[in-house]
Image 1 (spheres, rainbow over the protein chains, first blue to last red):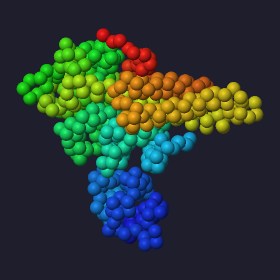
Image 2 (spheres, chains in turn yellow, orange):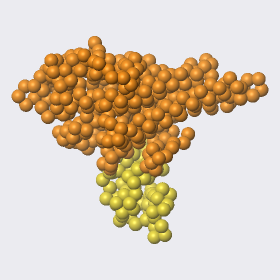
Image 3 (cartoon, each protein chain N blue to C red):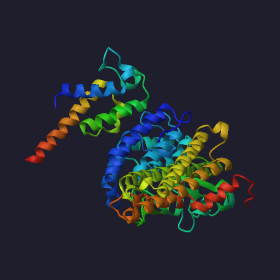
Image 4 (tube, each protein chain N blue to C red):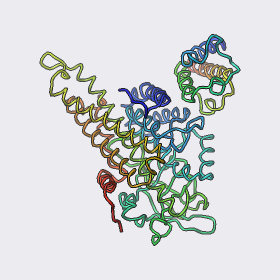
Length: 93
Length: 407
């Protein structure tokens, strides 16, 4: 899966959950979900849970707690999705 | 089923939604396999997910924190326990126990244990903790602090220079052998009574600590129990939660928290069975109409719903009181212990009756493992039996209403 596709899907999840916070200017990948969008931590958990379900991946506690900005989330999800795809391909050999 | 405000905040609603999703997607589809998951391969995936999301500290979240180190209330943690228990009471309970074991350290602000816990969170997933209270010869005797003042605790802790030396054994400890930490209820000096009660933390790999095999139980397989043996187990002096007098209060407070969580778990189990039987009775026909259209069945369903709703309303009230202890009194007070005991006793009686009725309404199908009800029926019974069982619970309720003259 391409990084841009990951970005689009992650953005769609964030926009759906943070409808009121995002506005017309869209998502800024340099922003931190909690600190910059001023949301309850539980909203962030809702986003991470939806990301895990959507991509069928497991985000560890460190990623969930220590991410610096949204861009870092894209990167981590992209990495995990592709790792999963590689191991699937290997499984067929 | 809707929750009410103002006791329930917007955040609580959001947390409930998240946990409900986890229960629906991750627990309910595999709950029939849990009895046979002896190695906990399936269950641990769920615990890991809860840990990663910071939703595994259950009851003590009030004194503990979520993944972002924000304080979570007793109301919130009780809702988490109910929602998880709707899927599987064992998972709901084990998630509570992790925090329950650590709450004395967090309440006493014991930095040695808090830092140890934080290190474990960094390095392990999931992180389990155990509260070791019951002994082979006595459960109620230990918990009956107003009567025995901790004099019947046989596990001893002797001070030697800058260490505690622990000897004795504990029984039926949840996650024994798996947990990273054990909060052990000890007695330092029988002549000191309540002042001799000590809650001492023992890390898993401490020399002299050993574990028995897991007990074979009727249900609640997600919560594994075993004995723990202490043979001259030595831990640093600052691994005691607090000090003389305070540790006994922390112990009583833990009974209060445990009974509240038990109430929430019982409501969750009853709800799971109720939802199953609602579905079943809407699809089974007798005499040309669904069985839930027959008045005798509708009456039973109404009783089940009434029990669930009232038990939930009551546990939420007690959780709210604990969150506002400056107004209602501390968790170790006789009155609050009494209220938490009402929570557990009422909710477990209700859950046993509800799961029993659910089984009756399904006839022999209800007894089959292919259907979900029999597991709820087996699981909720154990909730009634721990923490002093129904009878010490009743005693603690009565004591809340009259001055008790213990020796």
